[in-house]
Length: 308
Image (cartoon, rainbow, N blue to C red; front, side):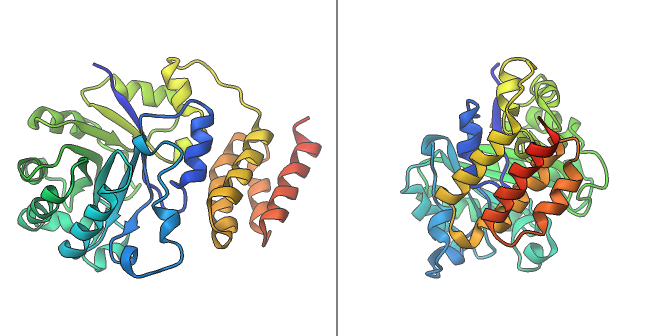
């Protein structure tokens, strides 16, 4: 069975510039966007068009929606479904307190009926693949997780991505990947796993287990070639790191609004610098810069002094 590779939805990271960079190395099977607020989508804000840019491969792009109001989420799902994309994903797994307080993200996991009713409302409005990303739940209760996911399946969910931690654990303990395989045995629909993927070898190892897809997040920012290495069964990629960083800056300038340039660059290099011998020092230097031009100059100067 062929296991698919997904890029995880990550705030300030899973945007078109990163997707373009990963495509430079051959890409992955599906790209999940960063969370799109169902409420903000119709509020007339200046940045929403950037969040719903599905390039460079719309046929691989999955729009992830977050919200607390079923009517707003359903309306947003119907709108996004009319754009070119691979599917619509409903966020029921974000554990950030500010998200949960509004009744969004992982708050949906508190009620099987509430979550099921949301999917039943969305399903008739969406022709493309409808998926849900979630966690184990508020407690380590596999029986509840199965009950929850079976309801989603019954209402028309076609794919579930499980981040196998509870809502409150964050990264305090290792992801329980055995839950991914166990959940796959309980459902008829595909199940993807997400959590603690550090490199291509880990991606390959998890793909060898009982799941239909493996999702990588921060590791794909740190190593945009991770999916290429996995496809080559761990074959070692040795990219030009300076050129890759400059390529990201170029893509950021082209595919993100100027208001996002500095914050998105610092988020990206916060992970990408881990590839470098003096990466922590360089991160500190980059974080002092207030403009993208300064970030680019600091990046180039580092390689003049350290990597030649």
